[in-house]
Length: 444
Image 1: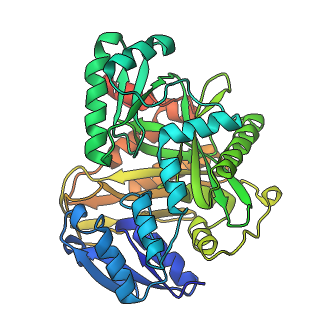
Image 2 (image 1 turned 30 degrees about the vertical axis):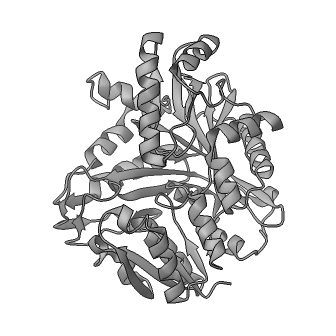
């Protein structure tokens, strides 16, 4: 087992990793930017070290500074969390070169599965269904020709990165050229890779992802699905498990496909295989996230398996000691992402409590919300024996939560969980966007 792990992240995920390490008897090193000098992760870790100025490019994305910090502090491994360098093949390779274990898949797998074009082709080869689309396109003229084969509406998608960047919806031909170059420019700026491809834009679908764990000895487990369909501008807002419309037959088929995908990719550690689920039960592979997901806690709630601890064990080459037939998914869990809509000082904070209610966060009284990083303040998570009870529990928790001093989306989340569409489980990837765009109350 590792003696010391450097946590190459900030905020709630850094807190989550530090807590897991403490429970496993592993010392931790927190890295922090100048803006995060007084942060909760820096206070909780056994050791801490500043890695640069407040902007992420000068700190949490500064590969050399992070590697230097790990070597200086005597860390055996680096846990990247999610975001920042978590899916960066170059950083994983740099860890390997310096004799530091990267807690995640190796650099070759990160590079291969981070390329959406490559991963699509791999899925086709092994018989996992993919959304109809193209390979990488050289220019808008070629895109127009291929679009005639696929049909509108369609998506222009970057082959690299994620987070909704480098993606454009095209409803008709005269929109395509501008959208093609806009997506390419955005991808080049965000990922230093402007390659894009076309994919059929499927409507009335749900975004369902499967959590996998894979060790270094060929053992692969699937821990069930998460429904992540409720999104705004391609950003997830609320996630739940189990998926309200999933049948046992489709669940098993999708789980089998996820395991098949992980095996074909020669994947190790925790990962997520993402699908679109159509109303007729047909599902399509869209990508594989080669890291810990923001919404992993709801899977931990229903499976009883600590994904972060298993990430660490797998990186230590400890084999999985759980068999697929012994994984039983019980109850229902919901996560609401609580986001800031302004910067400022949190001058009053009340976090809800109760049985199976928790708020994963790095917020403390009088902490400052700065403009340099992602807007997520934390994740409110509830678990109950059934979905209706989980919804009521989430509603009660949101009513109890108070974060003053900055604007947040708490009220929007409350309206969402009270909506008829959510209560009935009758929603898809466009539902939340449509409700807001139509100017109706979200609870109508």
